[in-house]
Image (cartoon, rainbow, N blue to C red):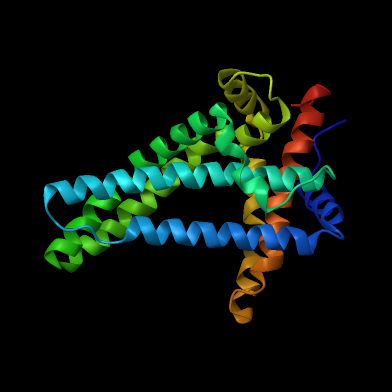
Length: 238
């Protein structure tokens, strides 16, 4: 079996979500609630002295780790949905009981934090000085850091699915498998994600309510992409 085209992968995702939208939307809403709660808690001001700044960075780093563990839970939700396996709101918390997930979350959070440091520093300078030039620097640095992180992340983008599929494998073996799965497939994956931009734009007139349909569609498509990769690579397709 060869790796499916992106249009086929999206079609498979739509088919697998039939009859499940109410449940996945509930999980997605709860995930959004958790993310906003963590962002608000980590973004609250702590002062401008050195101790407060160190505390701010520490809280930011910890929030990155927690968000990654919840992202694993979201990956589990949609992989199970695509495979017609049980899932629910509780799936979002499933990663906290797996040391491999926690370590991988720390790995992702470390990369994310490292690439965000320049933007955080510029933002801190803007808040302390009020100089508008630092606001522009913060935006540029944050954008550049996000792009670099995304490029690095692509090789590891299938890691959470691999961890779910192979609970007996070590984290190191799962990382290697993710890199193998994405070899020669990165542009295909990026192309699939870009293909959702028109739908995301169409949600603007709905004041974001359309995201309740688009976001599950995107997440299910990414899970379907993984399923296509594993079947295609197992059959010897590059």
